[in-house]
Amino acid sequence: MQPHVKEALRDWTDAWDKHQRTAQAAFIAAFPALTHAARCQCFGPTLCWKTPGEGSGKVCLDDHGRATIEFEHVPKAAVGHAMKETWGADWFDEGPGGFAEAEPGSYHYDDEQTYAEYAFDVHDDGTVTFGISYVKIDDIVTILDELEQALAEQRAA
Image (cartoon, rainbow, N blue to C red; front, side, top):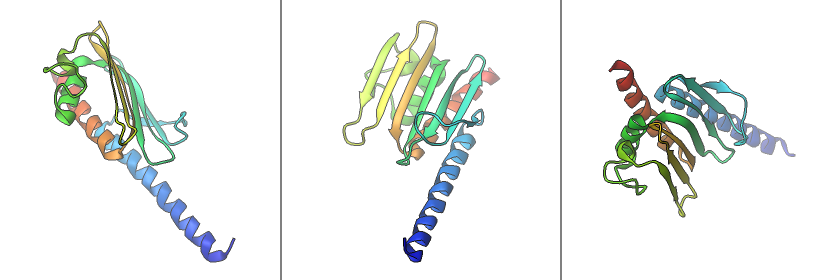
């Protein structure tokens, strides 16, 4: 490989590494319970969390610069608040009150334009397990921030 090509590739790799580090920093700023973890099936940097009474999960980046969030057993009221603030109510056909008032069941949406996938399982115990896959980093940061704010309000109550 020619020296100028090697240098250009090295510059790109350095920029990509910085992109991943700054994305992780944004995730952690929005949702401080996240900590660094081993890589997951995304083949990219992964952050995990587990807080008794609030749930557990992970956020990862894939090698295309898209983010995925997979959270389990998060209080339904907090998820409802975060979803309503981010996308409004009834975007996923969960009803006009949003996920905070959604009946137990599964709610899914696949975005054919962006290939993003959204899956929410509302449980009988008042929690939600959800995955948001292949979305822009700023979308994940927004939902994490809203979720953290809702959980903080529940902690303070």
